[in-house]
Image 1 (cartoon, chains in turn orange, yellow):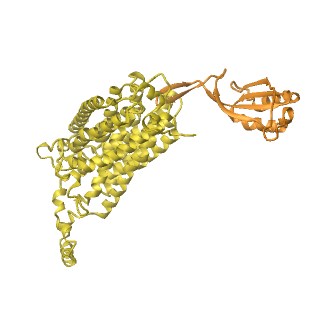
Image 2 (cartoon, helix red, strand yellow):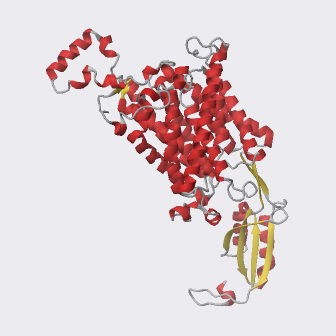
Image 3 (cartoon, chains in turn green, blue):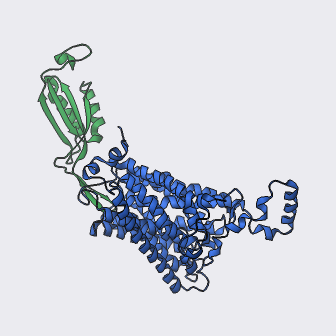
Length: 112
Length: 460
């Protein structure tokens, strides 16, 4: 099992969700986050007072999948989240030791 | 405002005592006598009519009073609280709300009396205490063509908004108790004498000083007090390097819209009548607001590359503050010129105070209200004059030329600035000695809402 963490532009969230749904992924966690990478921040101006805003709003998605589906899920996320401009985000993949469905007590792939 | 229609004639303001004893006021018990007097009134309408209540005037000033209170609560309160950081949103709302309540009571206790009644030997500078606790004011008391109760209420709403405007100068760092004490003393020591001097038959009224709805009394006063407060208290922690962006601009825009509408009561109500002067004042006010908004928007667009929402609403306040003293004296063309001048000059003043001098007048009260009010007072002397073609005004006081009137206007503006600056400084020093003006650095970081009020604006 792998945990796929994707940080994407917030306005691509619905597209990513739909793409993952088509891949048979029926659950995910979404968190509103702030951060910066190569896109850096932007400038805000209030009555002439200039502020550089370093942290931009992004959406962070966490999806747990079985090992066979990792590549296709990653591809689906990339396809749906890509705009081609700086700031499209990143995907991290980590090993997942265990998963448990609380209601039934199922474990491993059955719990995904 | 009493004097707006009769510049240079201070008796207009102080006529209510006599009118309280007018025949119509004491005959309610006897219908026979009333019928008899009604007959007399019909026979000689002019003799009685001079002191009669005009229902049209009364209806409009009742409405205007509500509009001007609406400017402070919730207009200004929303406008200001959207501009601070979220941890201080309640403190600003609380300051505006408590000032509204405090000023109402002070006005009732002695503020109105000191503003409107004859001060005897001190009449040039302050009124008397004869109407303390509004003694002798009843449903039959008359001021001009409206009930005195309505006049008291209308003037009260001006005494509410003026100290509330100062809140923007010391926002996000002043102790509530100190703020409350300061606002109370300031209302009595600064606002009341200036209002009396201009509208209550005092020395500026005698000179023919033209301030229709409060360019000096409200805007110079509040702006200068905010600047002095910002200087005495010092900058907010981290200013100007730490970002302090507004936490809720939609709230500010809502408040700005309410201010614009409320300003119709502020300016057109200052005619103290429902007549052509009120209509012209409303027209001038509206044109001034629109012109100020656009002037700021285009200036900012050119200077920084983008037109901003905060910019256009700030330009609106600048245009309105600048047109305020002129609103009953100028025509539509003059209002357009004054509004544009207000937007452009206040924009530059804001950049200068904030960026060049790095003075933390937190919500820009001085560059918008103080500078706008000062500019408006001066331009009133110009655009009130007839003979300027499409920019002609409604006329200067008898015997005045544009030059002489400009002199009077400058004198009144500088005198207001000087008294307000001096007295505000002294009051702040006294309050600081009694209870610290500022909260501590840690408390400032934590936010005034939690530290001073044990509440949070947003429990999301």
